[in-house]
Length: 383
Image (tube, rainbow, N blue to C red; front, side, top):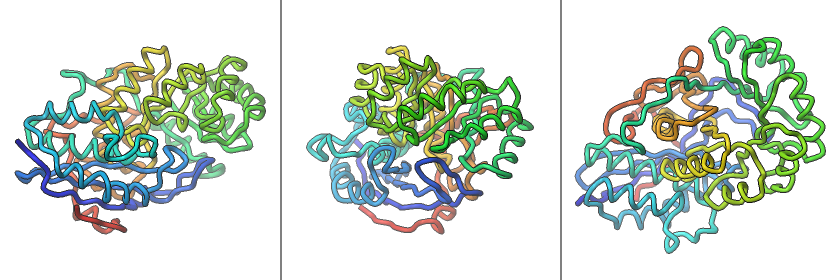
């Protein structure tokens, strides 16, 4: 029987190499949370989340306080006889804390993602078990990561596009603004060539009428998938875009938990979903969202929050291998984006978007270098 001796929670700001902008935010650091879990026998694991108010309704400070005051003290009371008991507990939670800990209506999927990963990592090490959601699953041989272009026109955009072409990237997502990004998409098409799969992400910048005007224009440059073109709660608007444009409509901010996915399916409000571990309640819950989406005939993109370390990248590789039918992937940016990545080994995509090799050690397979992490910690608490 193994329990939890201590949690340590950190607010962390990992600096970016350059600002990253889209219609909902401009960021220069990760603005993340790292959760350290130490078992009673001394094994250590880590979890990570990047709360975004416009994504899951959570802010970093609220997640910090929720974990420190309500969730982590209750977790410290738990014991597990084996790794299967850990998996059973997390499957039952399905991306949220038990209802008698935190009421289900409280926004908490980012908070629980940190818990989910920390428990998997710590007890995977405790019981000497590498994390596998599907035993023996491997990354699809043809899977490649996409590049994501910040909504920053001008020289930076041109340099990024040229670098992607030289690096052999064949899938690119362009962040577009409320003006539609028509020039940026056309420019990207000219630089990247006709063989590059382009898609657009408006991050809720448009209303329905604007989207109905802009989407066909961008489609002339070969864009066939549009991510979150309108507000997250405008499901009628999303459904109208699906019906009237004949183009792909991907739900991102509209999807966080099981209930939101079922509503999207029932309303026929999308043709694709973007599943991100940090917004969907962790690895186990994200796997459930992907499987349900595929059952409903939706295209699956497994994405990331901007600024994830290689810890979350390791979890994402596990998820992609387990799901298999992943059309688009975003993540494993590593030091392509971050100036400093405190997780070891560094996981980042290579030439052509080729994914890195999955770590095979127990838990998530990566470790956190706390000496590298410490300079970027702005808040800390021990439970």
